[in-house]
View 1 (cartoon, rainbow, N blue to C red):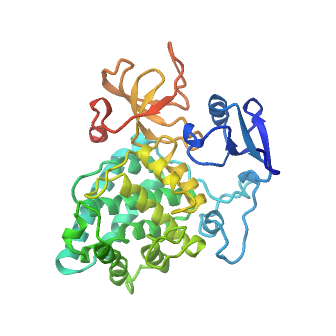
View 2 (cartoon, rainbow, N blue to C red; view 1 turned 90 degrees about the vertical axis):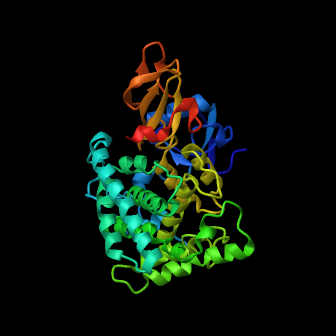
View 3 (cartoon, rainbow, N blue to C red; view 1 turned 90 degrees about the horizontal axis):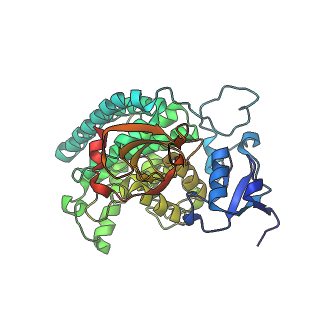
Amino acid sequence: MESQNQLKVNTADLELGMYVARLDRPWTDTPFLFQGFFIRSQDEIDELRRCCQYVYVDLEHDHPDITRTKTGVVGHDRTITEVTSLYRAKPRLSPSNRNRNRTVYANSQPLEKELPAAKSVYAEASRAMHELITKLETDGRLDLQLARDTIEPMVESVLRNPDAMIWLSRMKKHNSYMYHHSVGAAIWGLAFSRHLGLDKAALQEVGLGCMLFDVGKTKLPHALLIKPDKLTETEWHVMRNHVDYSLNLLEGNAGITERILEMVRSHHERYDGSGYPGQLKGNQIPTFAKIAAMADSYDAITSPRPYSRMRSPYEAVREIYGWRGTLFQPEVVEQFMQVVGVFPTGSLVELNSGAVAVVIAQNEARRLKPRIMLILDEHKRRLPQFHIVDLLFDTHLKGVGELRIEKCLEPGAYGINPEELYL
């Protein structure tokens, strides 16, 4: 049924700039994993035509390129897009971007050139977090300078090209969850903040906050942290105390800003008020805490944990989208989905040719056509060399026609070990 502000449009008549509010079928039956988006490319029009006969276009949504950013004091009724506009880096003014409500950072390095530097940064960050947590566990001392020194090169790498650090973050270990999660959450927090257009100083705050929001867990019984079963009510109460322990370790230290403390205090708060410790809901939750919560949750569910099955990147996207409007603010989920992509970095995928590949980087303007690394040929035989294909440009294959992703595969499909792909 059409609403007053929505128009039923045949997909043959779609145009760039239209806001697609509804489809003619469930969203989960299509590659479009978040509901409501502007058509920004011919690629998206083609995909909508392939999936649907018609869609509903919202007539009241302004295209983002002509939406004026609101100004004034931040109030609790502001959306995350409006709030983050106050922290974003100043764009170069030109007729085409003067009124955009976020800054888009351009990649200054391709993935292949950034990956060696990112490997070094990632290895050092993992080593530094191991040292930081070990010191906390042995003598209770928090080395904030070590944490700050670790974040700076991570920020620089993510600004040059976030795909390299994101790809490396997929190297999940089945031990030492705490420090690997600290690094992974920081990477996702930085990538998300970059996407939102926050300036460099804000990125450093987000990265440091995500890296440190769980340091209070070092004060908890080790047996509780590694328990493979569901926690009892008493154990859950003890686990929640890690927020206060983290705050006690960070408050009063030079370089720990109020926004960092907000991230630590509120990264377990949830949009519907079901979180802790304050049962905050909606826009009572600080914006930076919303960013931290999303980074924390996504990295956690894609990591091996004693008490929960590790989800594939594709499964994680589906699960988080299911929490839209309950655990997380819809706008936050939609923006984060653009960072992760329809086919997330690290996903194993099968092409319409039958070949199998791993997604290594996103094409932000065309989420359905990421960069991939071919692992198996169309007969599922391992290739002697892994070839990189950009689906945005390498669009055709002899005997196949248009080359596209047909489906996501389970981790380990066809005996592929994802970790060997990062070497």
